Length: 163
Image 1: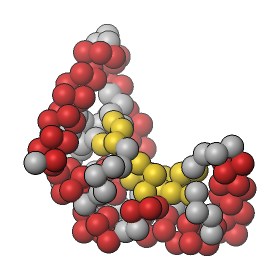
Image 2: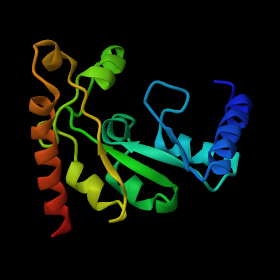
Image 3: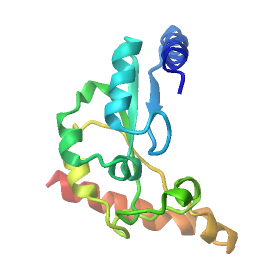
């Protein structure tokens, strides 16, 4: 919430990353001081470092009332990478942190407009999966069995977008 302190700290972080040949990135999340893509963009402007970018988490983008259209208009040079997952369109915001940290869906199992989001991004963007599945893990289902369906679904979606 202390804007000046945040700008100073992100600037220092970006400088440390640059000194090591790295890019720094920030992630917005609804309910936090940095809660929207627009807020992240404003922070990047204020920090003024060219190596500072934003992580696009599909769930956070849509749940913060963002859209594929907003993403398409965003400076692609400022996008560090995208975290692909799926979820229902709406959420109980009181439970949002728990959902974000441990209860996401494989691409195609929810209601997020993933194809539209991916189509709005540059073709060379790094795509990662952000699909924590705590309840399934606690049932004893191992990482490969939990995550292979997500990898397969992501690959299918990326192939669909490429056509």
